[in-house]
Length: 407
Image (cartoon, rainbow, N blue to C red):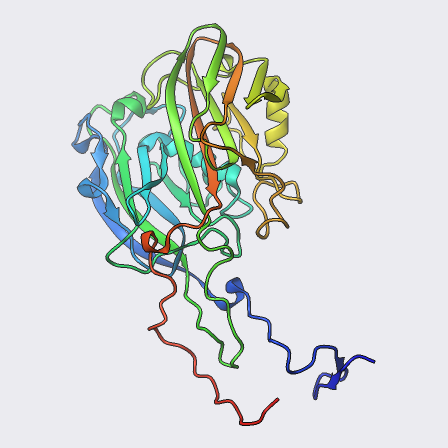
């Protein structure tokens, strides 16, 4: 008969001896989600003046983000305070507002470098911000050409239990953000004639609090997110020119595991941040996605659209014209994203080496092609190059003294 002990108030045998090591409370149960305003930029006029034509850099350079706990992501909220008098926005509006969103690691390395529209795709296909990952469905969204309202999000964590969240506890070594508003010429097909819109841009930090070593009952708690040090990266390559006919798009940024690859076709033309209007006719049809010596995927645009659309969480179709998507972060629920770290949720990230041959070949139309890659580094980062974790000098819940001789 197993060594059991009667537990008062429970009414049944306990199979585990009382001397066995107590299991730690998981990080997502011990920590708490928080949000805090990092910076506010008021009176930001598109173009830099009433009818200015320049790009505008928020804060005139990299913005130091608030150090707090374990960073989950960065929200950039943009709201119009003075409307433009008129104007006709382009087809990527209002996500074309930012020509660059760049997140720097604490060691200065770039973790994310994308346009505003690529940020829309990053959230839509990563599935890391919730069931509604379509930024155009957020409650304060408006695509008004004269008075837009929208939010951009740079996800850091990979899953809802904190997997991928990164230590952000050093005021000396902060994460930094570059945010550049694009010129009116790249936002409007018919620009305002009296004044450009004026915005207030607010930056928020989503984070996890730092749990104590034990809770108020003395139970041990995990103080770091699962597999802390695993980090996500997102990069883009824009305005790759193609003539009509057979062509090859070489995919860079290899060396980590790929979550997804998003390819955007654009017709030849001006007025957009990376070329002309989105156009499916520029994309390869039929296509072959080559992975080293293997033809990993061979299909058509119709097949590809059916594939990725079936995984999305309640998308609209406004910004889905002229794209292809290849995803390796679908969960066992067959939704993009997951519910817990591998092996329970993510089915198959695609591993690559720096020398991996990764190409999209096929019959292209004339125009330009952009692509976005979202990858994951599963190697631990040197703690000296990452924000401090965890801060053991902070408040800890009191723990009762051990009773001498207790078993």
